[in-house]
Image (cartoon, rainbow, N blue to C red; front, side, top):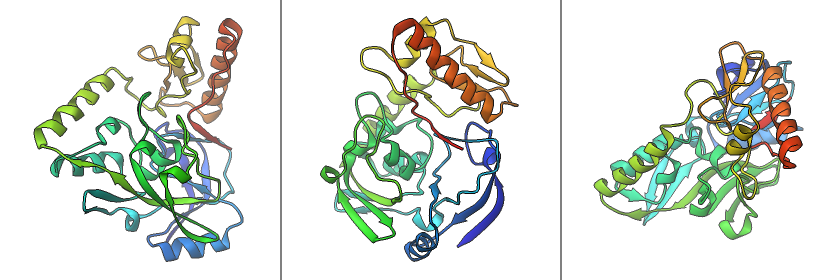
Length: 278
């Protein structure tokens, strides 16, 4: 198991801001992970860092990032067994090469499978938890295999309790043709080509019932609004962009300012989709 001291959060998150992480552990086996959980009173799990913003101050809470030992993909009689550290891009690449359909909606969504499951990443209509047959998890009590019906997931929330680490999942995929899978991937990719470029954590807010968050922020006149090095994207108002020198304090202040303006104008309380860790 690898252990890192004073790791830089800005190098491990797509928002590219944040201070240092006092202790970062990278287990490669379930045995190493189980031993580690037995030693830690509390911890934070980090996937690909595409949906997490660390504070500017040094973080003393230990962080766990699963290593390459959790990065396998295996096809088992029409079911895809995938490790939690597999990136969504690698997962889609495997499906393309093997003509498997069912996961194309993950196109353009960064991060790892574990992170995607934790937040039920996906589109407005479909989340990755909808494709799950079972999720493998580990906590201080041991290893658990949870069927989808045992997990109370919903839109942008995977339903897993704190203290539980997702180690892998069995996903429902179906045989297709390379041409069909590629066409579906391209269709989703085309929809995402209009998303902003630059350092960001993707969509900042969940879509409230009735109106997309980006529409509300746009109608509130906040496109281009900035605090320090953080600004609301002119391309898509539900994205906050780090211009290059934004602090986490800048990002958090901008999030609060956007929430206040939308609440004032529309009476709607926006809820963060990103996870903020202080």
